[in-house]
Image (cartoon, rainbow, N blue to C red; front, side):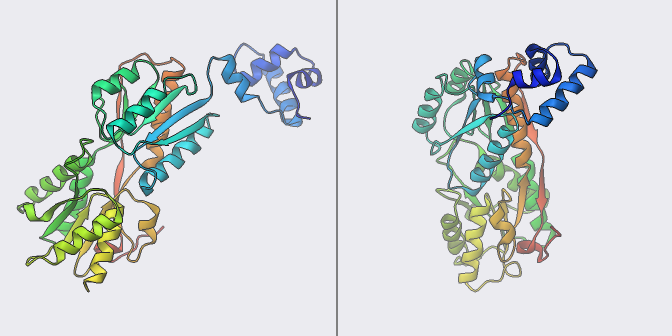
Length: 340
């Protein structure tokens, strides 16, 4: 049978309360006594009952994560990082998919008000800041992505304008002059595409290049099929692009497939760059140049904020955290593969 506090106390020659203080880190314990108790804890292989500890603290030890779509490799990878980071805090994560719609996000956030979860991390595409404010007022809430919660909740994001500027500038530095942008989403209000378009346009302007409406292509979703369709249309035009910046790696992988079908070589005839640094892009042929947001830090910073709110350690105004990103140059633009 698993050792309990009484077993440890008896072997260490101390009270049960002393053992509890050592395990929880609460209450004063003399250094020598703490060392002796810890040694017995290790010898007996004691494991704390985390569920009971959470319940005694009025917590469930469960948090929620809401993302727009789990079929997206980016959100799937991010969800995995959140789950693993939460495990370090002895938290269980309930993962839900909203579809990125007002109804889907509203349904999941309204349902999160029960005592089933202690807090929520959400990546919204549709809900306006005023509705996010209502939910932030009744449970700890952290917002991910480009949908600005207007200061009503902690917000973890990436500088999409700077990132898009960097990847477009890279294509320009390679001598590309007709650079398409694939991924505009005028039907969404989450701000992702708008920010990436702004960075793309700024880079063109800085280089003295025009931005042409015919090279700025809207899509319904940031998936492979839409990328392939968009680039197929671009390559069939009288003046096709010599490079394409896709607003997601999924779009970029589809773009590479369309280039192959049309007889173009990547990157010789068409340089292709994406955004997100998903695993598939690293193993594609050619491997994909991309913007790599620090997804691990997104998960860590989001849960750090959530822990502070759950434990009521933080009553300060909501903070906006911008995590780092980097441009990863691979075969699809420069014809080179960086060391792993």
